[in-house]
Amino acid sequence: MGRSKRYRQGEASLDRGATYSLADAIGVLQSFPRAKFDEAVEMAFHVGVDPKKSDQMVRGTVALPNGTGKVQKIAVITRQEDKAKAALEAGASEAGHEELIQRISKGWLGFDVLIASPDVMRDLGRLGKILGPKGLMPSPKTGTVSDDVVGAVEEVKRGKIGFKMDRNANVHVPIGKISFAKESLMANAEVVVAALLRAKPAAAKGQYIRSATITSTMGPGVGIEVKEIVASVK
Image (cartoon, helix red, strand yellow):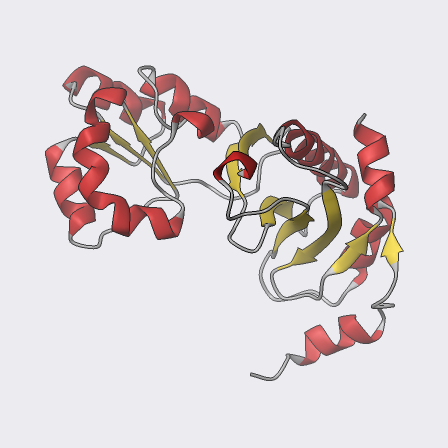
């Protein structure tokens, strides 16, 4: 598939071999021709671990101070009707138990985040092939398995997101929208880098963050100077 004219224009103004400070990379990204919609901005990292080894898994959560700019659709699965009702009042779009499980088993995925109480995790086992590949399976490590489902919903509404390394040792994390002020994107980016550093496995050897880029939905990636961003959050 050919690249769009907008993408080619942005790419033409970019030194593909260069890496930039975080502030400059965001500035370059925001200087590209804009799409007709408010593009999402994402950071991508390549980390120095072996994704085939279970003790080198990289995953975690981070609360973005300025949010992602996206309204997250949250579904909650719990056996307790009072908790389901409270979750809806807190901002969840769907909450329940067996009916929700049945809908998901038939392919319904009308949510961005799935939160579950611990007592239903056994019930969700049969949904692993549906939720797993989409990164939607609730996990205690991401705060999406909790007795306090209302608190978990509120955290997501405040900007808490999860991240997980893929099979190629890459980590992709949304940090906002292209319309955000530069300072807001920087603040979000810095807490993401700090969270990624905290998630470094004890078994990881050598350089941990090997490369970093920032990109918008329709734009080319802009390389970020790794040493600079790591130093800025330490």
